[in-house]
Image (cartoon, rainbow, N blue to C red):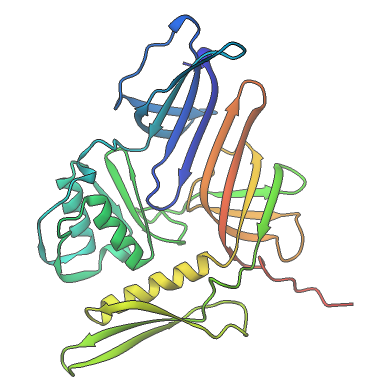
Length: 324
C-alpha cells in the first residue's frame, strides 16, 4: 500500500489502552478498496513490525484543496469480540496465571503471557463475578501494580516498571542524545504530590481474629518525604495485602516525574522499555521508563518518534553539583 500512503501514525501505550494505527491513503477516483471492519492490519517501519491489529473504522473525506482521502483506523485487538462480554465462573486453589488464562480462553483469546512472579500468586478462590475479561484483568492489574494489554489474540500481564515482557525478557533501551537524535524535549524529573515514603494495607488475620497492617518502604530519594500511602479497603490475607502495597509502591515510583521527548524515528522504542537521556543538564539526564510511543510519518515532513516518559531513575532528579 506504500504508493498510496500519505500519512501514518502508530501508537503503543502501557496499561489497558489498545495499540492504535491511523493510515491515510490517497483515494483519488476511489482507487483504494474499502477494507472491512475486522480485517487484519500489519504495519512495518524500516522493516520492523511496529503494529499488528484489526480495522476498526474507515472514515472518508474530500476537500477541494486536499482531494479525496481514505483513513483506516486500526486497533490492537477486535473491540467487537468476547473480550467485553461478562463472565460467570470460579476457580478454587489456583494461581493468578491460571485465573487469567481461564478468563482469556472464555473470551476467545489464545492466552495470557503473565509475569512469572505475579503469575505464581495463589488464592483460594478466583472469579470475575460477571465482569468481562478486560475488566477482570484491569482490576487485577491495579491491585498488583501490573501492566495489562491485549495484542491480537494474545494478552500480556507484566509487573509495572520492571522493564521486561511477559516472558521475563528485557525490553529495548533507547538512547536520547542532546545534541543528536532529539528534536524537542520537555522533562520534569521531580514531582512531589505522587511521592510517598511508605505503602500500607490492612488485612484480617483469621487465626487471631484481628486486623493487621502490611507496610513497605518506598525509596523516594528525598529524606523530607514522610507520608504513607494507605490502600483503601481490606485485603483478604497477608499475601494479598503484600500485593496491594507492592502495587502502590510501583505507582509512587512511576509517577515521581514525567516528560515528553520527540526524536528522529526510533522504531525499536516500546512502551515499558527504558530511555536513557544524555546531554540535557545535571538532574535531568538519567534513566526513565517509557509509557507511550507514537511513530509518525508523512510524505511532506518525514518521520519522528514521540515518547512519553515517567519513573525517573539513577541521577534523574538529582543535581549533585556543589553550590558556588
